[in-house]
Length: 434
Ligand SMILES: Cc1cc2nc3c(=O)[nH]c(=O)nc-3n(C[C@H](O)[C@H](O)[C@H](O)COP(=O)(O)OP(=O)(O)OC[C@H]3O[C@@H](n4cnc5c(N)ncnc54)[C@H](O)[C@@H]3O)c2cc1C
Figure 1 (cartoon, rainbow, N blue to C red):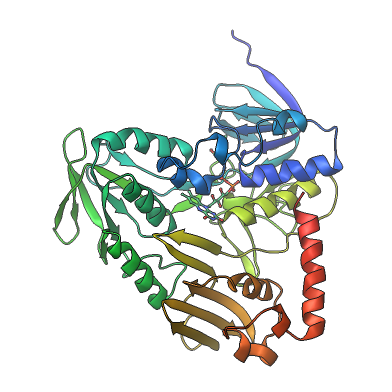
Figure 2 (cartoon, helix red, strand yellow; figure 1 turned 30 degrees about the vertical axis):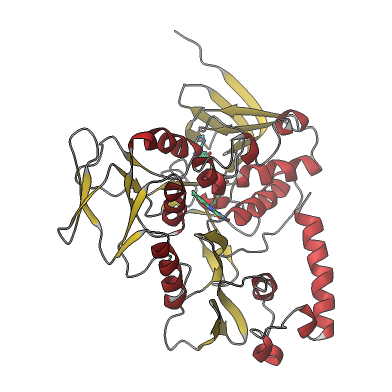
């Protein structure tokens, strides 16, 4: 009988990305000795996932996308196991089983397993030329395939869909975006901002079809086109499925760890099972805009959540300050910053203020004199200060009228507020960044 290898560690970190790195950095600040194993089924050192589009455009190599230098692991005395998947967890005996049968015993566990692309059942699936776009390997696969592909259909007009669309366009591929809802970027933008973004894409030669979806992918072994639910045929040689990402909770499901849409965590990023923590895209952590725990799958939230988990795993009490959906992007030459609630439900006491002139569109959503949503297109420099007012739940009643004025800045806030803010930002930066 073959004997399977067995390792033992104080800290086991599943996932070697924003959340995992945040955690090990915090652990090492307070525990220099405790053994750490980080494991990922991706074969690469931690890289910036948002940059995979730049890899596809060949503006970035893996080396220039690394989130931490290659020496990070050895310098911090971390054993990294790359290209291996954790198959299951044994919570009672504190073990993890890898797909190759190896076992790792742990004292503290972090599940920072991120998300997986949602791929709906579609007629014609399984052909060559169908891709998702969430990993470096996805970008590599598209990069190789693109030599033979001049036309693509991207299913989904959200952030990932628009990101891959821009990269494909830069590589000379003619792209059609098919979005099921009535407008692109509909989860982060309001109608007006979506239509500005749509115009920018159209100007760049992208065809956008909204209100429809792909009913079938045609071709034999290789993709030859798609048929929409309207019956329209669109010839293409590749399809990218980019309709969203769901939390990767497979290790926790079916165990005693509580899972809703994501893994449930408290303000210490601890799950309901002792010694087990979670963060990032896999977890449902506190959203300060919605005042409840929910998925907020963006890089900074994963990293900060990871740090909080790391401190607590190492025995230092730390609280997650809360995050929310927040994005700052530049696609097709258009600057966009959006955070919180873009489209509030009607008649629920929300107040909207907006400004539109000279290609600039700015909108703020307020409730009870608190900023709960920001959508800025064109000029986004002021989005940062508004976001911090939103994050800190600052009542803006006294300077509401100033929020969108051209000369609004820290100095527009009451003096004691901006002095407090400067101090607080310095503390946050000191505490969260190394
Ligand atoms: C194309 C794209 C663009 C994006 N752009 C932005 C942006 O502009 N701004 C922004 O803030 N966010 C952006 N995001 C989101 C951001 O990348 C994520 O929020 C962030 O990566 C989440 O980090 P994480 O550590 O939770 O998980 P992930 O980065 O998803 O990493 C989890 C890791 O765990 C591994 N893993 C999971 N399960 C196992 C297992 N059982 N065994 C071994 N390994 C496992 C996974 O393979 C993966 O490597 C973008 C995402 C994509 C895909």
